[in-house]
Amino acid sequence: MRTKWMTLAEIALDRHITLDEARRLIDTTHCPAVFKTHETLYLL
Image 1 (cartoon, rainbow, N blue to C red):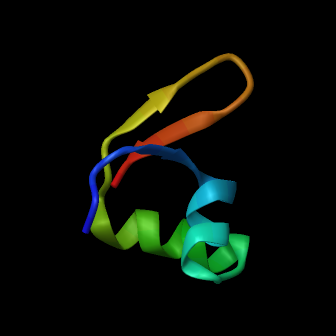
Image 2 (image 1 turned 90 degrees about the vertical axis):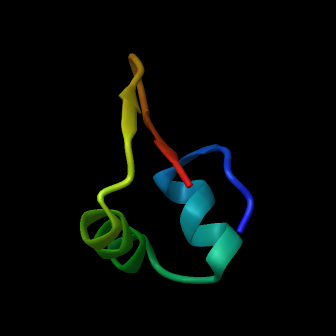
């Protein structure tokens, strides 16, 4: 799997899943997060 910073919406689009499924994925994998002014980036 590639490693890069992605928003929750990008994760959902990349994996062809819904935003709720992407949120659950992030919660279960405990991905590091960086909080920006208008979005959160996750390291995958």
